Length: 337
Image (cartoon, rainbow, N blue to C red; front, side, top):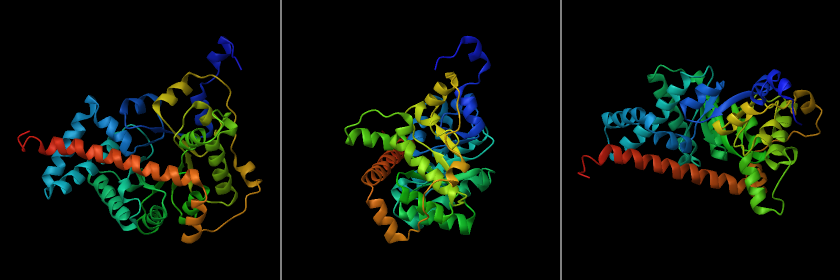
């Protein structure tokens, strides 16, 4: 639908309209993008921090993290891990100066099958934020949506009052288990679901309303709202603005700077496609998943199994790259390199 130049001046951008119906979150570690688009919250992950840590503008944060790791001492591995945790928190603290809401900080993906390890690392990150004068109410700890990750989230929420953002969520089983665990927020991935169907099926293009990722998030949203779960649904990992607009009305959407820029330049009328009223009228039935049932139902979804394992491997690989970068900063000079 084309819009006349006169109407376009009066009509809000698609981004501004979206903000009336959905909480917009910036999916970036780049402070300039956060300043420009003024989201409520921001999300980070190892890949985003790795990219930002290589930008000249953020070398002071990297230097501060390196100094912190060396100051605490211990083995090389311990110093690198402490520097890495500190770097995540330094980025989070800087982001929080620029937003009114919360920042999401991710636990190392290599702990994805270690419930106690995730709990310990999450508490460590919260302690580092506390040292920086930031309370746990402004932090979401990101955990992989494995069975172990979901159970770690349950403990962190119930026993420590630490809010969790369950990431790498691709299956309905993962969403049901997260709701039953009582976590604060889930991040069902949209674009990576689309990627899988395009790569593995005959159909190569989808209308936004038929996009498999959009349909997945819509089903999860409807299930949560129909059965009164308080867990926030935050669609993530978008490939185009069509997917975002097709989820107008979702609780939260976390969006990359590139797509935020495109939405800010679009002038088309947005109407909510998701609503609590429609959700309550849907025909979904409530289910309960213990560990055995969760593993079976998740395993039945080939796309979700492959994308979860792929996502964990990719985040782990970027965590290793980040550690390698910090190691070179910390030890290359003293090793005479």
